Amino acid sequence: MSVKEFIKRYAEVTLVLAAAGSFWIAGSQLDIFEWFHQFSRAHEGYEVDEIVWGILCFGVASGFFAYRYQEKQRREIERRIQAEDDLEWLSKHDSLTRLPNRRFLQKVLDSKPCDDFIEKHARFGVLAFDLNGFKKANDLLGHKAGDAILKQVSRRIQSADGVNLAFRLGGDEFLAFVDFPTREDPVAFASDIAKVITRPIDIDGSMQFVGVSIGLCILKEDAENLTDAIHFADLAMYHAKRSRTAQVARYEPNMLSTNMERAQLEKDLISAISANEIKPHYQPLIDLDTGEITGFEALARWYRKGHGFVPPLEFIAVAEELGLITELSDHLLRTACLDAKKWPNHVALSFNISPLQLADPQLGLRILKLLNEVDFPASRLELEITESALVNELDTATEIIRQMHQLGIRISLDDFGTGYSNLSQLSQLEFNKIKIDRSFIDSFQRDDKRMTIVKSMLALGSSLGMEMTAEGVENGAQLDKLRELGCNRGQGYYLGTPADSDDTLRLLTSHSAQHVTKAG
Image 1 (cartoon, rainbow, N blue to C red):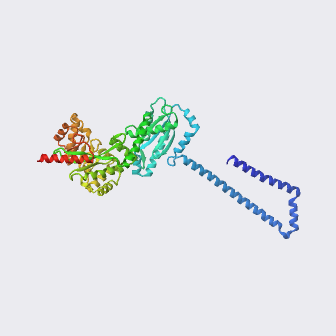
Image 2 (cartoon, helix red, strand yellow; image 1 turned 90 degrees about the horizontal axis):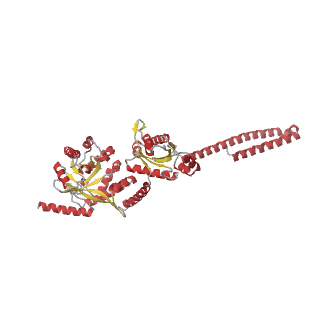
Image 3 (tube, rainbow, N blue to C red; image 1 turned 180 degrees about the vertical axis):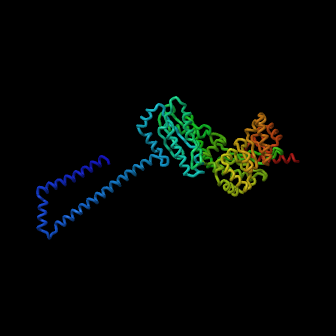
């Protein structure tokens, strides 16, 4: 009860007591009760005493019901106050983990006590967390298991050494105010917290593993105020996430400009995909025995205005992070199929599938629908799946490969030797072709170990009845040695550079004429 409400209630009670006291004094002076008794006895026919008794009973009953009503009102007010308090708490806290949320964080930033709190700590900083692989675990195990993972992670962050206050900002992103030891490397200190967070989590008897990327920023060392420290820690976290090698990153000034450049790249990429500015170029696949072109691999090329050509590994990774890889891939495949329809029927089209697309169970249906729309025969299409994607998405890849074989599409295992797939997987998944990664071809003539590996790969492919293609053939010496070792196909700048659709048609025409001349 507030002071104002208490004063009001006190005044009401005082007024009632004063009125009752006044009536009592007046009644005692005038002998009201004796007068009433005599009057009611003298006028029995009026039944005044019965009427008064009824009034008294009604008054008592009214008082009782008034009391009940007041109690009900009081409880209702208390419930409303409690509900308002609950709503206020929910507006500032995450209902799942019960951690303060982004709104609470903003109130902390706006409060004067926050500055006083920071001044009491020798080395105060901020950690920004983002879980790696959480979405996959959430999709595979269900939302209930995903919620259990988030709860466990939040408890681990709260209980970690040095953490003063933790927040859940949304999804799988967390933030923490931390006391960093004055004599310890902050990156090493944050790495110890990462080890605590990434310990296996028991979900209904099954151990689940979730990674984490952490960005850190120390006040007065890396940022002048807490708002900047939070922003810089977030930038550092995204830097760690994109590096795919560092689990923890400390903010550095160049990260701000890098982030601005990245934001502009994302904006330009979205526009480029929407305007179909990213085009397929085609690099020939050569039969090393006859020298004939057996097919072309479609390679994405983006000419970014004001910047020139952007490396495919750079913008494809951005498209994957933005969730645009499916839209981009569908456009490139459609365009490539339309271009390939102009080629001779024996020339195949080879097309790369992004590792993220292997998680899409509708991939086979989408490709079939696209082939039907452009009237391109499935037998001329060859899909390339990287070995690393095969290792990470084995179950899904197995089903997709089965679907593709049913459609008549050939499957090639790309970048062989880099993903550590085992022989059992190779024998079960029925690949039509294996492509030896360029990293082996680049130095196999100078490195005896790599030479042995290449020979083993070629022998393995031959024993399994698979066509072998060597990537990255850059000179005649490599070509001659690959022919000597019995390699079927070759690809690389020495054999042909990527070209647009028109140049590819001209290459096919001139190549065909050369073979006709040789035959004559």
